[in-house]
Image 1 (spheres, rainbow, N blue to C red):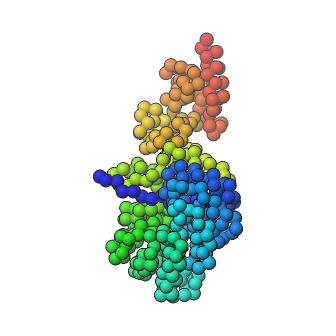
Image 2: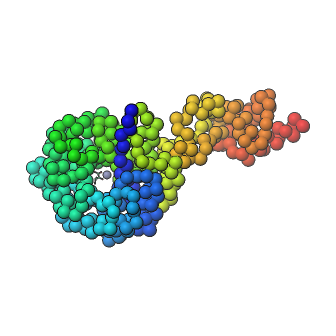
Image 3: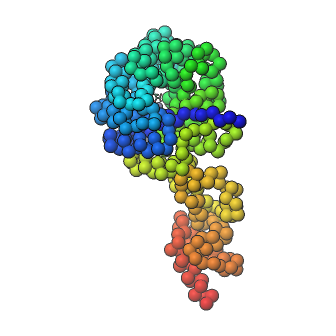
Length: 387
Ligand code: KIV
Ligand code: ZN
């Protein structure tokens, strides 16, 4: 099967940076952007230039230094925003303006006190303004997840006619179920006559924990760009996590998609983002959490030690993680105990392990995790009794 490329649009430095406490200065943005470029993302959303002088400066600097990726600046459907973004992107080798407006009833009535027809005209207008400055214009239909498909299709057809090269269909509130989001993308593929002139992009938020599933559903229905962040950072419950979508496509080769991302850099970059943005990664986070390759229950440990594939679908090396860990808790079994003793230089017989296991369980019941110091004490006490 020939592989279809899915573009990775990283918005760690824009949507991710909107998280309270995660604000980045220009130096930090430069460091992360260079690491994202090395990772192999295709587009970096560098910031929202009109939002502050600091962000304008960051987008300008990134435009100067990034050579391989497209550099993108966010705007509202406001002429001044677009002019300022164009200035900030002036030095970029591949500049992209990301402009758009809310298209759901909640936004049209609740935010703009407007009508569908007026919003349609504003959508067309903002793309035309952006086209005066750059060739590559991405249009976002904010809250597309809750926008009527018929109206969304009208807007998307019109903005492509106005010159949009990428059409972003955000599930801004993380409301959609995967089949609904997939159906929405399929609806656009089947009902927008000029859809072949643009790339469809997924931008899914994680309010119901469905951002990764929704993005993949979008790709299966025909989207060819995913907007995502390292560690899933972003507004509220966050955005689609980059490492997750990349590894879903890598693990499920049968789907026929590939990205340019070098997966071996995922864990080091996750740590760099976490440290720079002062935002810890939850231990059970897929791909990059500290427990993502730890085994602690006896049944799992026994299977894993016999053959890793029984309980691990990804080789940690493939995602740049430390080797798999056998963690000793009160739920661990004899094979895990023997394995850990062996790792610190004690080769015990089956009978020894039977004796040691009872003692180990007493320690394990009194602690969350049994460490090497505990093991040395158990081993030395055992050796002195046997000797
Ligand atoms: O979530 C959203 O709709 C956005 C847009 C600005 C693209 O972040
Ligand atoms: Zn967003």
